[in-house]
Amino acid sequence: MMAYSAKKLYRSRNGKIFGICQGIADWRDLPVDFIRLFMILAFLFTGFFPVGILYFLAALLIPLEPAGYRDSFTEGNENRKDRYENVRRDFNDLKDRVRNMEGRVFDKERDWDERFKKDK
Image (cartoon, rainbow, N blue to C red; front, side):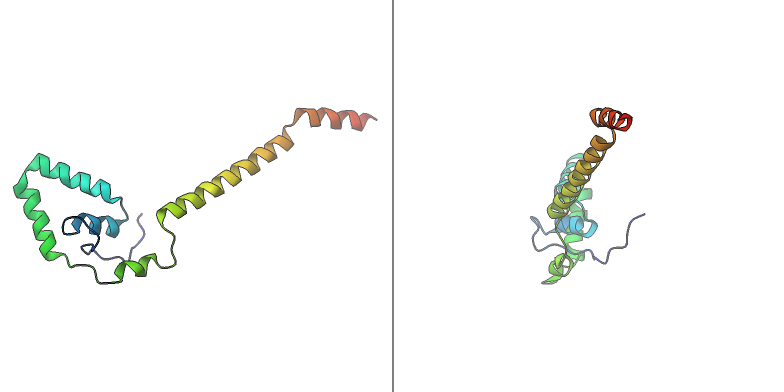
């Protein structure tokens, strides 16, 4: 189930051609390269008329994002790279903790030492 997003569909001010692909990528939190590749493949396989006309209609109908709109969603939030690095760091910390715990529990030399100490 997808979480509700307060983002609206706008043409991006940072887009390449009319900002349609960048706007869709921002709206659905997808990589813009994936959207652009999809549009190019759709253009190549269907021709200019269906995809090209729809693209230009979208450029006319979808409003341009207001100034400062993008800042309202990124303010106080981490970007994807920072989130990835934080998750990666947390995962590596957890992996090290589990490795240390396994080392203490399954250390055979320690087990033998403790057995001999009990007998004395």
